[in-house]
Length: 121
Picture (cartoon, rainbow, N blue to C red):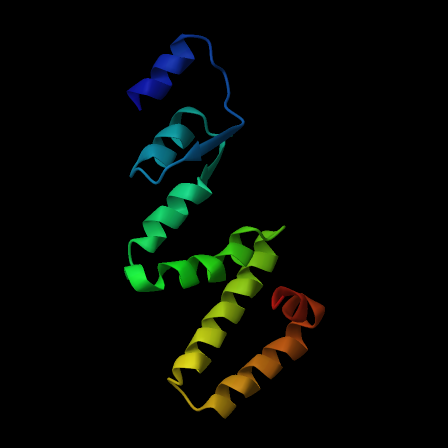
């Protein structure tokens, strides 16, 4: 927080957007000193941190699957794509009955219509 307080003493009155790397406490420090600032996590750091949980042999496939999500034009489109990815992966692993997942995907498609089918591509 000292860094942001120093910025205010140097004349900075506001920060419009702050892109952070996931360092704990940094968003809170920014919001304390500059409460109107929009704070978001850098997509590169988010991807690197997420891939830490993926085995090396699966990384290329996971990155390819995540790319449509973080390239989505809106948060809503990204959420739909994320749900689609989760359902697709669960069906591929056959953790439940395939027909149950197909029914769930059909129900989801009925509720969200075009937003769901557009997100699949």
